[in-house]
Image (cartoon, rainbow, N blue to C red; front, side, top):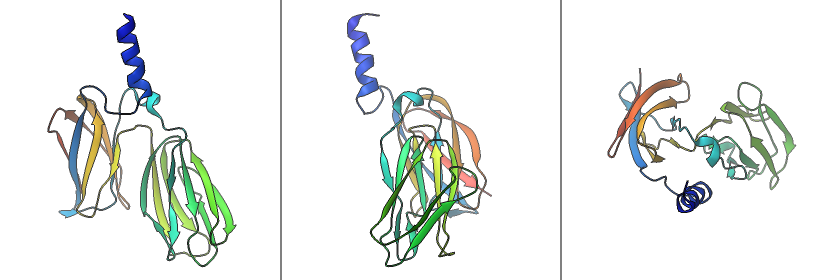
Length: 192
């Protein structure tokens, strides 16, 4: 490999930014004809292992006796902070599936951090406040999104070609399929 091509390949791996030839894929998530807020959509990318954000930190806030956001998607290797911005104690935990943890009782102003090092879904609750619930979907790819109130989402930096996609929503099963990615590609997800 010529030195110039080697250096370009090295820069593409080390400097964040779109891959050459990558495109944006837009879509919608619906169930029974209605838009789904908080659906997680992700696409498997062959070189995902080189782009892992090992030191990224994301926040799952606790405020007004609820988690914000209710649905969070992160890539494997991401650390999640759980700050308590309420006026009461919380005890955040997840015992089923995904990452299992129990942060113990902690007061307002305290922050606990957990690394999410394996893919899967973690259902998160507060041991003191049974109405508090959130979902963390950990994916092994840099290409993922969470749908907005109108069910719309946008996936950036998607390589062109035929790729496998996955979609999940609270209360729904994971859907799997394939998409032919090219400029202007659209991915519409529908649960029955």
